[in-house]
Length: 404
Image 1 (cartoon, helix red, strand yellow):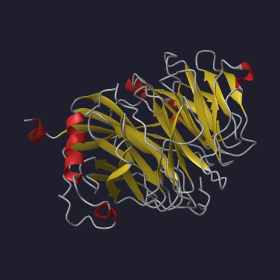
Image 2 (spheres, rainbow, N blue to C red):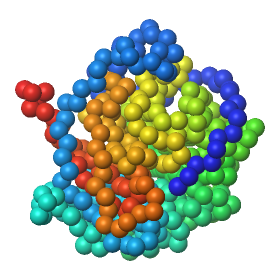
Image 3 (cartoon, rainbow, N blue to C red):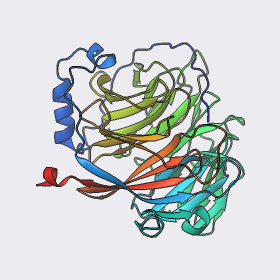
Protein backbone atom coordinates (compact mmCIF):
# COMPACT_ATOMS: atom_id res chain seq x y z
CA UNK A 1 0.00 0.00 0.00
CA UNK A 2 2.10 2.84 -1.31
CA UNK A 3 1.31 6.53 -1.36
CA UNK A 4 1.86 8.75 -4.37
CA UNK A 5 4.56 11.43 -4.06
CA UNK A 6 2.84 14.60 -2.82
CA UNK A 7 2.53 17.50 -5.27
CA UNK A 8 3.69 21.02 -4.49
CA UNK A 9 1.98 22.47 -1.43
CA UNK A 10 -0.35 25.42 -2.00
CA UNK A 11 -1.30 27.43 1.07
CA UNK A 12 -4.69 29.02 1.77
CA UNK A 13 -6.03 31.10 4.64
CA UNK A 14 -9.61 30.46 5.80
CA UNK A 15 -11.75 31.87 8.62
CA UNK A 16 -12.22 29.58 11.60
CA UNK A 17 -15.62 28.53 12.94
CA UNK A 18 -16.54 27.19 16.34
CA UNK A 19 -17.51 23.52 16.20
CA UNK A 20 -17.31 22.45 19.83
CA UNK A 21 -19.18 25.08 21.84
CA UNK A 22 -22.09 22.72 22.41
CA UNK A 23 -19.96 19.62 23.08
CA UNK A 24 -17.99 19.05 26.29
CA UNK A 25 -14.33 18.04 25.94
CA UNK A 26 -13.25 14.56 26.91
CA UNK A 27 -10.21 14.39 29.15
CA UNK A 28 -10.51 18.14 29.62
CA UNK A 29 -7.87 18.19 32.36
CA UNK A 30 -5.42 16.16 30.28
CA UNK A 31 -5.90 18.34 27.24
CA UNK A 32 -5.67 21.49 29.36
CA UNK A 33 -2.37 20.27 30.79
CA UNK A 34 -1.02 19.60 27.31
CA UNK A 35 -1.97 23.05 26.10
CA UNK A 36 -0.57 24.67 29.24
CA UNK A 37 2.73 22.93 28.60
CA UNK A 38 2.66 24.18 25.03
CA UNK A 39 1.66 27.56 26.45
CA UNK A 40 3.37 30.54 24.92
CA UNK A 41 6.11 28.54 23.16
CA UNK A 42 6.80 29.34 19.54
CA UNK A 43 5.61 26.62 17.18
CA UNK A 44 9.15 26.23 15.86
CA UNK A 45 10.10 24.66 19.18
CA UNK A 46 7.85 21.69 18.28
CA UNK A 47 9.31 21.19 14.84
CA UNK A 48 12.88 19.98 15.23
CA UNK A 49 14.05 20.11 18.86
CA UNK A 50 12.54 17.99 21.63
CA UNK A 51 15.62 18.13 23.89
CA UNK A 52 13.99 20.48 26.39
CA UNK A 53 10.79 18.48 26.71
CA UNK A 54 10.07 16.56 29.89
CA UNK A 55 11.19 12.95 29.58
CA UNK A 56 8.39 10.59 28.52
CA UNK A 57 7.48 7.94 31.06
CA UNK A 58 5.28 4.90 30.61
CA UNK A 59 2.52 4.50 33.18
CA UNK A 60 1.27 1.24 31.66
CA UNK A 61 2.24 -2.41 31.49
CA UNK A 62 1.49 -4.01 28.11
CA UNK A 63 1.66 -7.75 27.49
CA UNK A 64 1.00 -9.88 24.42
CA UNK A 65 -2.04 -12.00 25.23
CA UNK A 66 -3.14 -13.53 21.93
CA UNK A 67 -2.08 -13.87 18.31
CA UNK A 68 -4.02 -14.82 15.20
CA UNK A 69 -1.87 -15.96 12.32
CA UNK A 70 -2.57 -16.29 8.62
CA UNK A 71 -2.05 -19.70 7.00
CA UNK A 72 -2.26 -18.21 3.53
CA UNK A 73 0.78 -18.63 1.29
CA UNK A 74 -0.14 -15.49 -0.62
CA UNK A 75 -0.21 -11.97 0.79
CA UNK A 76 -2.82 -11.47 3.50
CA UNK A 77 -1.73 -8.00 4.67
CA UNK A 78 -4.19 -6.40 7.08
CA UNK A 79 -4.91 -2.84 6.04
CA UNK A 80 -7.43 -1.77 8.66
CA UNK A 81 -8.64 -2.88 12.12
CA UNK A 82 -11.87 -1.46 13.63
CA UNK A 83 -13.85 -2.17 16.81
CA UNK A 84 -17.56 -1.41 16.85
CA UNK A 85 -18.91 1.17 19.30
CA UNK A 86 -19.55 -1.40 21.99
CA UNK A 87 -16.09 -2.93 21.71
CA UNK A 88 -17.57 -6.42 21.38
CA UNK A 89 -16.88 -6.97 17.67
CA UNK A 90 -13.69 -6.45 15.70
CA UNK A 91 -13.58 -6.18 11.90
CA UNK A 92 -10.50 -6.40 9.71
CA UNK A 93 -9.91 -5.88 6.00
CA UNK A 94 -7.01 -5.84 3.60
CA UNK A 95 -5.37 -7.58 0.68
CA UNK A 96 -7.19 -10.89 1.18
CA UNK A 97 -10.53 -9.45 -0.13
CA UNK A 98 -12.31 -10.53 3.01
CA UNK A 99 -14.03 -8.69 5.85
CA UNK A 100 -13.38 -10.82 8.92
CA UNK A 101 -15.49 -10.41 12.06
CA UNK A 102 -14.18 -11.44 15.48
CA UNK A 103 -15.95 -11.60 18.85
CA UNK A 104 -13.59 -9.72 21.16
CA UNK A 105 -14.33 -11.62 24.35
CA UNK A 106 -13.97 -14.95 22.57
CA UNK A 107 -11.41 -14.69 19.77
CA UNK A 108 -9.17 -12.10 21.42
CA UNK A 109 -9.38 -13.48 24.94
CA UNK A 110 -6.09 -14.12 26.69
CA UNK A 111 -4.92 -17.72 26.83
CA UNK A 112 -1.77 -19.80 26.75
CA UNK A 113 -0.08 -22.45 24.66
CA UNK A 114 3.37 -24.01 24.89
CA UNK A 115 5.14 -20.64 24.63
CA UNK A 116 2.72 -18.74 26.86
CA UNK A 117 0.61 -16.99 24.21
CA UNK A 118 -2.62 -18.16 22.66
CA UNK A 119 -2.15 -18.62 18.89
CA UNK A 120 -4.99 -19.32 16.47
CA UNK A 121 -5.40 -18.98 12.74
CA UNK A 122 -8.02 -16.73 11.15
CA UNK A 123 -10.25 -19.65 10.17
CA UNK A 124 -10.52 -20.82 13.76
CA UNK A 125 -10.69 -17.40 15.39
CA UNK A 126 -13.13 -15.34 13.32
CA UNK A 127 -16.89 -15.69 13.72
CA UNK A 128 -17.47 -15.33 9.99
CA UNK A 129 -16.15 -13.52 6.94
CA UNK A 130 -17.61 -11.84 3.87
CA UNK A 131 -15.81 -12.01 0.54
CA UNK A 132 -15.41 -8.66 -1.22
CA UNK A 133 -14.86 -7.95 -4.93
CA UNK A 134 -11.62 -6.01 -4.36
CA UNK A 135 -8.83 -5.39 -1.86
CA UNK A 136 -9.94 -3.22 1.04
CA UNK A 137 -8.27 -0.05 2.27
CA UNK A 138 -10.91 1.16 4.76
CA UNK A 139 -13.80 -0.19 6.83
CA UNK A 140 -16.17 1.59 9.23
CA UNK A 141 -19.07 0.49 11.42
CA UNK A 142 -22.22 2.43 10.52
CA UNK A 143 -23.57 4.45 13.48
CA UNK A 144 -27.06 3.54 14.63
CA UNK A 145 -27.03 0.15 12.91
CA UNK A 146 -26.58 -1.85 16.13
CA UNK A 147 -23.30 -3.19 14.67
CA UNK A 148 -25.18 -4.84 11.82
CA UNK A 149 -23.93 -2.68 8.93
CA UNK A 150 -20.32 -2.19 7.91
CA UNK A 151 -19.02 0.14 5.20
CA UNK A 152 -15.87 -0.37 3.13
CA UNK A 153 -13.71 1.45 0.59
CA UNK A 154 -11.66 -0.55 -1.89
CA UNK A 155 -8.84 -0.49 -4.42
CA UNK A 156 -11.31 -0.34 -7.32
CA UNK A 157 -12.68 3.00 -6.17
CA UNK A 158 -15.96 1.60 -4.79
CA UNK A 159 -17.68 2.27 -1.47
CA UNK A 160 -19.99 -0.50 -0.28
CA UNK A 161 -22.14 -1.30 2.74
CA UNK A 162 -22.65 -4.84 3.97
CA UNK A 163 -25.51 -6.24 6.04
CA UNK A 164 -23.65 -8.48 8.52
CA UNK A 165 -26.78 -10.41 9.44
CA UNK A 166 -27.62 -11.40 5.88
CA UNK A 167 -23.94 -11.14 4.88
CA UNK A 168 -24.70 -9.40 1.61
CA UNK A 169 -23.94 -5.93 0.16
CA UNK A 170 -26.83 -3.48 0.47
CA UNK A 171 -25.39 -0.20 -0.88
CA UNK A 172 -22.77 0.71 -3.48
CA UNK A 173 -21.16 3.90 -4.83
CA UNK A 174 -18.52 4.19 -7.54
CA UNK A 175 -18.18 7.93 -8.24
CA UNK A 176 -14.38 7.86 -7.93
CA UNK A 177 -13.92 6.65 -11.49
CA UNK A 178 -12.08 3.47 -10.58
CA UNK A 179 -9.42 5.35 -8.57
CA UNK A 180 -8.52 3.73 -5.27
CA UNK A 181 -10.55 4.77 -2.22
CA UNK A 182 -8.15 5.27 0.66
CA UNK A 183 -10.67 6.09 3.37
CA UNK A 184 -14.38 6.32 4.19
CA UNK A 185 -16.34 7.37 7.24
CA UNK A 186 -19.84 8.09 8.58
CA UNK A 187 -21.16 11.24 10.22
CA UNK A 188 -22.58 11.11 13.73
CA UNK A 189 -24.09 14.56 13.44
CA UNK A 190 -26.24 13.21 10.58
CA UNK A 191 -25.79 9.40 10.65
CA UNK A 192 -27.08 8.89 7.12
CA UNK A 193 -24.28 11.03 5.68
CA UNK A 194 -21.00 9.48 4.54
CA UNK A 195 -17.77 10.49 2.85
CA UNK A 196 -14.92 8.86 0.98
CA UNK A 197 -11.48 10.04 -0.14
CA UNK A 198 -9.67 8.77 -3.20
CA UNK A 199 -6.69 8.91 -5.54
CA UNK A 200 -8.90 10.94 -7.88
CA UNK A 201 -8.28 13.99 -5.68
CA UNK A 202 -11.81 14.30 -4.36
CA UNK A 203 -13.77 13.74 -1.20
CA UNK A 204 -17.16 12.41 -2.20
CA UNK A 205 -20.06 13.14 0.13
CA UNK A 206 -22.99 10.75 -0.15
CA UNK A 207 -26.50 10.56 1.28
CA UNK A 208 -28.58 7.43 0.64
CA UNK A 209 -31.76 9.50 1.09
CA UNK A 210 -31.09 11.19 -2.26
CA UNK A 211 -32.19 9.37 -5.37
CA UNK A 212 -29.24 7.23 -6.36
CA UNK A 213 -27.31 8.83 -3.51
CA UNK A 214 -25.91 11.46 -5.89
CA UNK A 215 -27.31 14.75 -4.60
CA UNK A 216 -24.06 16.03 -3.05
CA UNK A 217 -21.30 17.42 -5.28
CA UNK A 218 -17.71 16.17 -4.85
CA UNK A 219 -15.17 18.26 -2.94
CA UNK A 220 -11.67 18.88 -4.31
CA UNK A 221 -9.60 20.14 -1.33
CA UNK A 222 -6.69 21.30 -3.46
CA UNK A 223 -8.33 23.29 -6.23
CA UNK A 224 -5.10 23.81 -8.14
CA UNK A 225 -3.95 20.16 -8.26
CA UNK A 226 -5.96 16.97 -7.91
CA UNK A 227 -4.02 15.78 -4.91
CA UNK A 228 -5.05 12.32 -3.61
CA UNK A 229 -7.29 12.42 -0.54
CA UNK A 230 -5.72 9.85 1.80
CA UNK A 231 -8.06 10.06 4.81
CA UNK A 232 -11.46 11.41 5.79
CA UNK A 233 -13.01 11.58 9.26
CA UNK A 234 -16.16 13.14 10.63
CA UNK A 235 -16.17 14.65 14.10
CA UNK A 236 -17.04 11.53 16.18
CA UNK A 237 -18.53 13.70 18.94
CA UNK A 238 -21.43 14.77 16.77
CA UNK A 239 -20.32 18.14 15.40
CA UNK A 240 -20.84 19.14 11.75
CA UNK A 241 -17.12 18.93 10.90
CA UNK A 242 -15.42 16.60 8.43
CA UNK A 243 -11.66 16.56 7.97
CA UNK A 244 -9.68 15.41 4.93
CA UNK A 245 -5.94 14.70 4.86
CA UNK A 246 -4.26 14.89 1.47
CA UNK A 247 -1.07 14.02 -0.38
CA UNK A 248 -0.36 17.76 -0.77
CA UNK A 249 0.50 17.70 2.98
CA UNK A 250 -2.63 19.61 3.90
CA UNK A 251 -5.41 18.86 6.41
CA UNK A 252 -8.68 20.49 5.36
CA UNK A 253 -11.69 20.98 7.65
CA UNK A 254 -15.21 21.48 6.25
CA UNK A 255 -18.54 22.40 7.79
CA UNK A 256 -20.94 19.87 6.28
CA UNK A 257 -23.67 22.52 6.26
CA UNK A 258 -21.70 24.58 3.75
CA UNK A 259 -19.07 22.69 1.76
CA UNK A 260 -18.16 25.50 -0.63
CA UNK A 261 -14.74 26.06 0.95
CA UNK A 262 -12.77 24.74 3.94
CA UNK A 263 -13.09 26.47 7.27
CA UNK A 264 -9.47 25.72 8.13
CA UNK A 265 -6.32 24.27 6.69
CA UNK A 266 -3.32 22.85 8.56
CA UNK A 267 -0.14 22.42 6.53
CA UNK A 268 2.85 21.80 8.82
CA UNK A 269 3.52 18.21 7.68
CA UNK A 270 6.32 17.75 5.16
CA UNK A 271 4.73 14.92 3.19
CA UNK A 272 1.37 13.28 2.53
CA UNK A 273 -1.09 13.12 5.44
CA UNK A 274 -2.32 9.55 5.90
CA UNK A 275 -4.63 9.65 8.96
CA UNK A 276 -6.51 12.10 11.17
CA UNK A 277 -8.16 11.29 14.50
CA UNK A 278 -10.14 13.47 16.92
CA UNK A 279 -9.03 13.46 20.55
CA UNK A 280 -11.89 15.77 21.54
CA UNK A 281 -14.27 17.93 19.48
CA UNK A 282 -11.57 20.52 18.75
CA UNK A 283 -8.27 18.61 19.09
CA UNK A 284 -6.98 16.52 16.18
CA UNK A 285 -4.03 14.17 15.76
CA UNK A 286 -2.63 13.61 12.28
CA UNK A 287 -0.14 11.15 10.81
CA UNK A 288 2.09 11.56 7.78
CA UNK A 289 4.74 9.73 5.79
CA UNK A 290 7.15 12.40 7.05
CA UNK A 291 7.53 10.06 10.04
CA UNK A 292 5.72 12.08 12.70
CA UNK A 293 2.34 12.64 14.31
CA UNK A 294 1.02 16.12 15.07
CA UNK A 295 -1.60 17.32 17.55
CA UNK A 296 -3.60 20.43 16.57
CA UNK A 297 -6.04 22.82 18.18
CA UNK A 298 -8.51 23.24 15.32
CA UNK A 299 -10.21 26.26 16.86
CA UNK A 300 -7.25 28.33 18.03
CA UNK A 301 -5.89 29.41 14.64
CA UNK A 302 -5.25 25.74 13.81
CA UNK A 303 -2.37 25.82 16.27
CA UNK A 304 0.17 23.01 16.42
CA UNK A 305 0.24 21.76 20.03
CA UNK A 306 2.78 18.96 19.89
CA UNK A 307 4.76 16.79 17.48
CA UNK A 308 5.32 13.06 18.15
CA UNK A 309 8.40 11.34 16.73
CA UNK A 310 10.07 7.95 17.05
CA UNK A 311 8.34 5.56 14.65
CA UNK A 312 9.43 4.94 11.04
CA UNK A 313 6.98 5.98 8.32
CA UNK A 314 8.19 7.10 4.88
CA UNK A 315 5.91 5.47 2.33
CA UNK A 316 3.09 3.30 3.75
CA UNK A 317 -0.17 3.42 5.68
CA UNK A 318 0.76 2.11 9.13
CA UNK A 319 -2.41 2.83 11.14
CA UNK A 320 -3.36 5.40 13.77
CA UNK A 321 -5.68 5.03 16.77
CA UNK A 322 -6.43 7.10 19.88
CA UNK A 323 -7.67 6.01 23.28
CA UNK A 324 -9.23 9.23 24.51
CA UNK A 325 -9.93 8.27 28.12
CA UNK A 326 -6.39 6.96 28.60
CA UNK A 327 -4.68 9.81 26.75
CA UNK A 328 -2.81 7.35 24.53
CA UNK A 329 -2.06 7.30 20.80
CA UNK A 330 -0.86 4.24 18.90
CA UNK A 331 0.57 3.86 15.42
CA UNK A 332 2.43 1.31 13.39
CA UNK A 333 5.87 1.55 11.86
CA UNK A 334 7.78 0.32 8.84
CA UNK A 335 10.29 -1.41 11.13
CA UNK A 336 7.55 -3.89 12.14
CA UNK A 337 7.03 -2.35 15.56
CA UNK A 338 4.00 -0.84 17.24
CA UNK A 339 4.44 2.49 19.05
CA UNK A 340 2.40 4.03 21.87
CA UNK A 341 2.61 7.74 22.68
CA UNK A 342 1.20 9.50 25.72
CA UNK A 343 -0.42 12.73 24.56
CA UNK A 344 1.70 14.67 27.08
CA UNK A 345 5.08 13.80 25.59
CA UNK A 346 6.55 13.85 22.10
CA UNK A 347 8.51 10.59 22.41
CA UNK A 348 7.02 7.08 22.59
CA UNK A 349 6.33 5.56 25.99
CA UNK A 350 6.16 1.97 24.73
CA UNK A 351 7.52 0.17 21.66
CA UNK A 352 7.10 -3.49 20.79
CA UNK A 353 8.31 -5.52 17.82
CA UNK A 354 5.79 -7.96 16.36
CA UNK A 355 6.36 -11.67 16.32
CA UNK A 356 6.94 -13.04 12.79
CA UNK A 357 4.07 -14.83 11.07
CA UNK A 358 4.09 -18.44 9.98
CA UNK A 359 4.83 -17.70 6.32
CA UNK A 360 8.22 -16.51 5.02
CA UNK A 361 8.18 -13.10 3.30
CA UNK A 362 10.30 -11.65 0.55
CA UNK A 363 10.05 -8.11 2.01
CA UNK A 364 10.50 -6.90 5.59
CA UNK A 365 7.22 -6.73 7.46
CA UNK A 366 5.55 -3.60 8.81
CA UNK A 367 2.65 -2.79 11.12
CA UNK A 368 -0.31 -1.86 8.91
CA UNK A 369 -3.24 -1.34 11.31
CA UNK A 370 -3.87 -0.56 14.99
CA UNK A 371 -6.99 -0.11 17.12
CA UNK A 372 -7.68 0.52 20.81
CA UNK A 373 -10.44 -1.18 22.76
CA UNK A 374 -11.09 0.46 26.14
CA UNK A 375 -11.90 -2.11 28.80
CA UNK A 376 -12.01 0.13 31.87
CA UNK A 377 -10.48 3.21 33.41
CA UNK A 378 -7.18 1.45 34.11
CA UNK A 379 -7.31 -1.31 31.50
CA UNK A 380 -7.20 -1.41 27.74
CA UNK A 381 -6.64 -3.65 24.74
CA UNK A 382 -4.55 -2.81 21.68
CA UNK A 383 -5.03 -4.91 18.54
CA UNK A 384 -2.27 -4.71 15.95
CA UNK A 385 -2.43 -5.94 12.36
CA UNK A 386 0.65 -6.74 10.31
CA UNK A 387 1.61 -6.87 6.65
CA UNK A 388 2.03 -10.63 7.11
CA UNK A 389 -1.68 -11.00 7.91
CA UNK A 390 -1.11 -11.61 11.60
CA UNK A 391 -3.21 -10.03 14.36
CA UNK A 392 -1.59 -9.53 17.76
CA UNK A 393 -3.48 -8.56 20.89
CA UNK A 394 -1.88 -6.64 23.76
CA UNK A 395 -3.52 -6.15 27.15
CA UNK A 396 -2.64 -2.98 29.03
CA UNK A 397 -2.95 -2.19 32.73
CA UNK A 398 -2.05 1.01 34.53
CA UNK A 399 0.95 0.39 36.77
CA UNK A 400 0.14 -0.17 40.41
CA UNK A 401 2.25 2.72 41.66
CA UNK A 402 0.29 5.05 39.36
CA UNK A 403 -3.09 3.75 40.58
CA UNK A 404 -2.01 3.87 44.22
